[in-house]
Image (tube, rainbow over all chains, first blue to last red; front, side):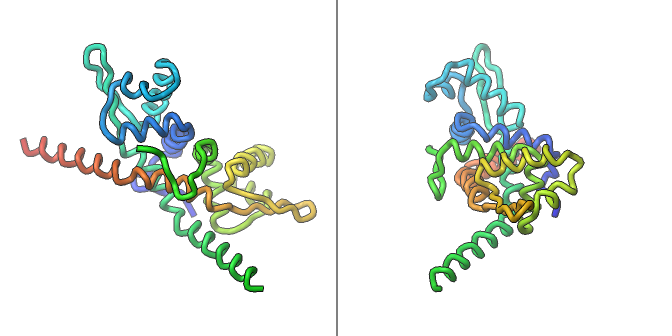
Length: 116
Length: 116
């Protein structure tokens, strides 16, 4: 079995996407950006962390190709690049039928044991 | 919008699952384990890295709840715990409709520009 996805994304790129999603603040930023573009300040406001800390998280999202920014004067407007999320979902999707089979057989085994 | 999933998985747990998936060797180990249980040696064989390096990757997968091992004499038999993969997929699934809308509107915009 080999790892494939729709865009044939290189391993390095998928490493970066999953790494970007491995932090709850970054996942919350992605969730916020799915609602639409926002300035860095708007993105930072709901979080109890400093603006530089949010800036660092945003750079991780950018490096993973999950986000891009447009500079309008002194304001940076951040937007999601949803393709990268699709790549991560595609990787998981490739294997979904395998783990669903595993979960089903675990459930069957549990039922069988209860019946003993 | 808040992050939810079927098992209401705590943020820390989801952090660990995505972190575990952020390495191509660990993703390949998960892919192999989806085919069925295997010994550490069987898991290590296809990889051009040392057995201790594979051992370290397996501990990351265990810490994320993606894998468990059964010790039979001197052999460790590793098996996938597929629930944790489902949790990661559920997180992505929660947002799929948002990014699919985003992708659709990007495609529409591109078509509109071509028509100009």
